[in-house]
Length: 369
Length: 118
Image (tube, rainbow over all chains, first blue to last red):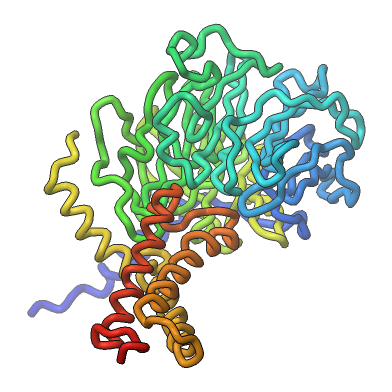
């Protein structure tokens, strides 16, 4: 047998190493805030001032990387149990003028304390206080469970608000009917009124806020500059999905799914049905996608247009290179910080990872020059 | 797509296997453990209570399933971890199943006779 040429082997190895180095993105990570109690979401008021929600019910300012020990006053009482609590914080598109912020949370019912719902409020931020708080959405009917709220909010280009509403775990079949808010995406105006062009306005028995249905627990929501709505949702055991959501469409849960129940039982024998949309990507086993970002910054120009999805299991970020509405490739990043609850893009283009749990952290990812 | 008889049978078979071995929490093991505890308590009680074994074990089996489908969710934020137990009718069926299992077990122990008849 002919002996391999050592020089050729070494040259090949060197070439591969150089190629791999050249194709990598150089970045560094730094823990900038610690001691957060179950952080869930993050909003950037300015370069210097950020807002972070803690599921236990606090909204807190971070100024120049320092966590304000005093939470914002005036945040409504939340139900902090199971997966419930204070979730999203979102600035109004005209925040610089109207100072409006939006919060989503699990709230106990006023009359029946054992029951709760997903609530969305808006209020004006005045210093470290939230004033003129008004409820603009409350999910119906009430639920007894403290799980699967969805609770992500985003503004569309036309100024309307999309809200993800989860199936409440016990109520999954209701995701297929239009007389309730379980497993739906909701579209309302910024004051809570109903837009005149919602898809089910003229459907008898349907709630007029519903924009799409057949969702499980959608927690990632991105609206691209061309109006495309990307949504990711937790599947059961397997079957996490990335969808492109369009008004009036049915995304199938639980009639079709690529997952099985946590008990090992089959939820549905079908993965596709006529009239039900397919995900553009799904994960088996689950990654537990918790939030999603469409990267637009300048710090990592090679990632512009990519979707970055934070994942709770095992805990990392999935970078999806997109070709329009198709996923070209997937890369796993930052698996060393545990469960990642949220990913945000700071005004300077750096990435902020929000880790999950009672000792939550903010980790900043910056490019190395 | 239609749910045919073959789909139903296939799902039943898949559930028997899946719920025994493939789940994140093994429901079959939970039910086995629940019945084991209940039947040990029933055995001890049978030394002191002069009632039929079949009835006693039926009560034990029903109580075990009651604990699993009614009490256990209270520790998990009211999540019904067994999907079939999400409705009252489903809970009742499972509790009845536990009682029937206990009755059968008691009957086997007493060789077809209640202890006061033995």
